[in-house]
Amino acid sequence: MSVIETMIDIPAEHERNVCGQFDAYLKKIERTLHVTMIARDGEIKIIGPEKTIGQAKSVFSNLIELSKRGNAITEQNVDYALSLSFTENDGQILEIDKDIICRTVTGKPVKPKTLGQKQYVDSIRKKMIVFGIGPAGTGKTYLAMAMAIQAFKNGEVGRIILTRPAIEAGEKLGFLPGDLQSKIDPYLRPLYDALYQIMGAESYLHNSEKGLIEVAPLAYMRGRTLDNAYIILDEAQNTTPAQMKMFLTRIGFGSKVIITGDQTQKDLPSGAVSGLDTALKVLKKIDDIGFCYLTSSDVVRHPLVQKIVQAYDDYEKKAGPKKGGAPREKEFKGAGKAPKLRRAKVRF
Image 1: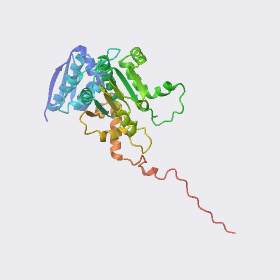
Image 2: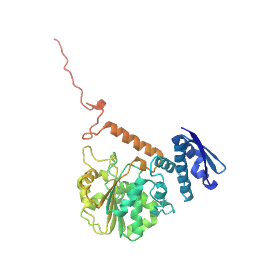
Image 3: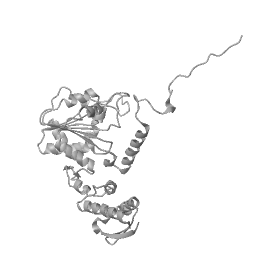
Image 4: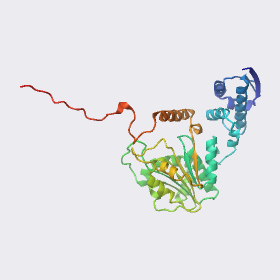
């Protein structure tokens, strides 16, 4: 395979953003594509096989364009641009970047960062009910919140209702102090965090006092009819089938519903069936309901989170399904059983 070289012009004002601190992004691209890159005087020389040089040029062209649009290039941008360079969707990263949902209180744009997230957002725009299924860090809740707040600001809905089941994540918290609101707030904190970041604390409190934004446990939804509202059910994997059915039958006219969940992180009692799993089977043939499955490649948190999610996926595939929550490993077999006592023989 012949080795060739080529040059790429890079504007001086974007060089540090695209190459990273101490050329960290440059080195990552070199390791991934097995090319040699030399940055000097506003140009980057790429040396390597013709195919990988084409990939490297494409990655850099995308990163430079993202930088020109005002984006601070992160390791996640570099990783995703590299992963797309091995597919036919190479130029899609620039199309994704154009889709700005809204801006935070600090002016930072909220937008999808991967193809999976773009499909998720598009599905929310088209469908009345959308299930967003995926591992931690894929932006399921955050993007849903952004879409809800933007619809509320545009007058498309009259109120926002956010709910999630109040279940401890594997810990017994005991009796929490304070009034009812103080007791349920810890379970709903992730929703508050997203609200404050996108809408601002003052705006949230103002609309909350008017009853236009409501954050409540799932149990409070029974008996209600939710018209002209944007409704988000978070952590849906922790619902029971009865709770999920109750929630889905609350929907009224002019409402939009987003249900998010991670099937790999259930906090239900051992052997209990998840309402999310049941709903995905029961509702899969209904055309007006969208199902978006995000994967580890859609994780937009720290790159290490993506590796952790992928490692757990690989481990669970090798381990196989568990029955009734019982441990599979042989070393746990018989654990907890009382030892058998032998009667001593005594001679007189």
